[in-house]
Length: 206
Ligand SMILES: CC(C)(COP(=O)(O)OP(=O)(O)OC[C@H]1O[C@@H](n2cnc3c(N)ncnc32)[C@H](O)[C@@H]1O)[C@@H](O)C(=O)NCCC(=O)NCCS
Ligand SMILES: Nc1ncnc2c1ncn2[C@@H]1O[C@H](COP(=O)(O)OP(=O)(O)OP(=O)(O)O)[C@@H](O)[C@H]1O
Image (cartoon, rainbow, N blue to C red; front, side, top):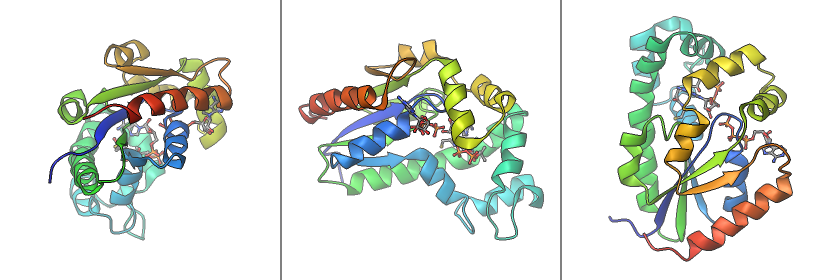
C-alpha cells in the first residue's frame, strides 16, 4: 500500500494545545493519529509493551492488572535520563510502527494528522515520513499553568518534564507551519488558526 494523503506532524510541548487542535480537526472530518493515545494502549492492561517493560524494569512499575503504573514511571522517567531512554527504546518503535500501519489503512482523509508530542526529539525517526511539520507554540509559563490545572501536577514536576523536552526555539526551527497558542489566545482564536491551516492543507498534495 502507498501513501495517498498528505501526512502532517503536529507537535508542541506539554500543555501547548496539540490535542485541542487535533480534536478540532477531527471534527472537520480529518483522521488523527495520536502518539500519546497509542502509547497508553501499549501500556494498558496486557498491552503489547508490557512484557518488555516487565523484563527491563521489573514488577515495581507494573499494576496488579498488568498495566504500566504511570505515577511510578513518571517519577522515575523525569528524574533519571537512563530510565527515560530505556522506556523510549521500548515504546517509540512500537508507536511509530502502529502509526504507519494505521495511516496506510486510511484512504479517505485528504490529510492525516500525526499528533506526536516528541516529534522534534525524534526528528530522524519521523522527518522522512512526514510532508509537513506544524508546531503549536506557547510560552513555558502558559504551559505550566495549563498542565497544573488539567493534571494537578506540581510546578516542580512540570518543570522537570519541560527540561527533558525540546526548547521552543528548537521546535520552531523545524516548523513549516506555526499555530501560536500562548498568552492572550482564546479557544476561538486557536480554532480560527486551525481552520486557516485546515483550508491550506486541504489544497495540498503529498
Ligand atoms: C512517563 C509516563 C508514564 C507518564 O504518563 P502520563 O499519563 O502522566 O502522561 P502521558 O503519557 O499522557 O503524556 C503526557 C505528556 O507528557 C510528556 N511526555 C511523555 N513521555 C515523555 C518523554 N518520554 N519525554 C518527554 N516528555 C514526555 C509529553 O508532553 C506528553 O504529551 C508516560 O508518558 C510514558 O510512558 N512515556 C514514555 C513514552 C513516550 O515517550 N510517550 C510520548 C509520546 S509516544
Ligand atoms: N487557548 C486556550 N485557552 C484556554 N485553554 C486552553 C487553550 N489551549 C489549550 N487549553 C487547555 O489547556 C490544556 C492543555 O491543552 P491540550 O491538552 O490541548 O495540550 P497538549 O499539547 O495536547 O498537551 P499534552 O502534550 O500534555 O497532552 C487543556 O486542558 C486545554 O483545554
